[in-house]
Amino acid sequence: MTKQKEWPKELVFIDLNSGRFEFFNIELIKLGYNNFQVVFHQGKFNNKGRNVIHRFNGEDSYLKAKKLAYNKFYEVKSEGYIRKEKMEEAILNAVKQEQKVDNEKKYKKKKTTYKAKTTNKCVCDLCKQPIHFSLYEKINSWGRAEGNWDYELNSPLYKKVVCLDCQIDKGIFQKRIDNSFEL
Image (cartoon, rainbow, N blue to C red; front, side, top):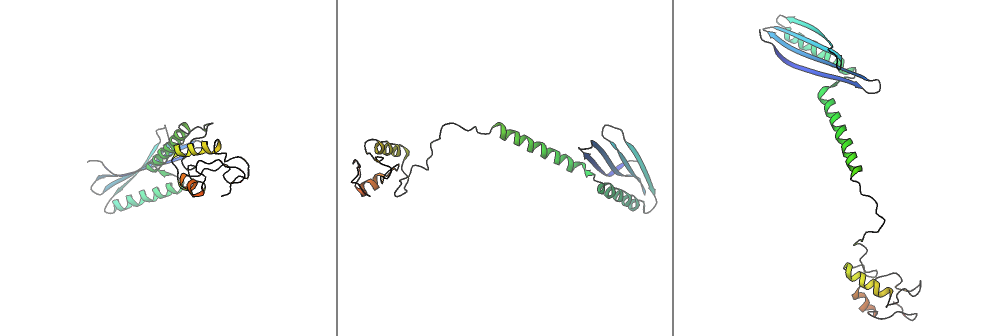
C-alpha cells in the first residue's frame, strides 16, 4: 500500500507575553481503497510532540475522516491557533516594517544650520511674477545699498524686491528713493 498525504494543515499558537509557542498539525492520509487515517500532531516548539491517529475503514471512511479533520481544525482554530503560513507572513511583514523604520532613521536628513536657497521667494513683490535667482539677488543688493529702498520702516519698498518691468512702470528703475517718493 502507498501512503499519500491529502492535506496537511499546520497551525501555530504564539503568545509572546506568556512565552507559549505551540503547534498543531492535522493530516488526512489515504492508506488504500476506503482506508484513511487522520493524524493529529501537537506539542510545543523544539519538542517532538505527540501523535493521535484515528483510522477509518468502509464505504464512508473518506467523509468521516474529512469531517473529523475539519471539526478538529476549526476547534483548534477557535482556541487562537493561526495557520502557519499566515503567521510566517505576519512575522516577515513585521520584520520588513522594522527594517524600513530603521532605514528611515538611519538615512533621515539632518537639520542644517544654514538656510537653503529656495526658488519660491524669487518673485516680484508687486506683480508676483517669478524672477531668475541671479537677477533677484542683483536687484535685492542694489535696492538695499544704492537704491536706498530701506531708508525707513514705512518706505513703500521696505524689504521688497521689484522686477524690472514694475520698476520701469513705476519710474523707479535705477533711481534713488527718498522721502518724496510714492508708489
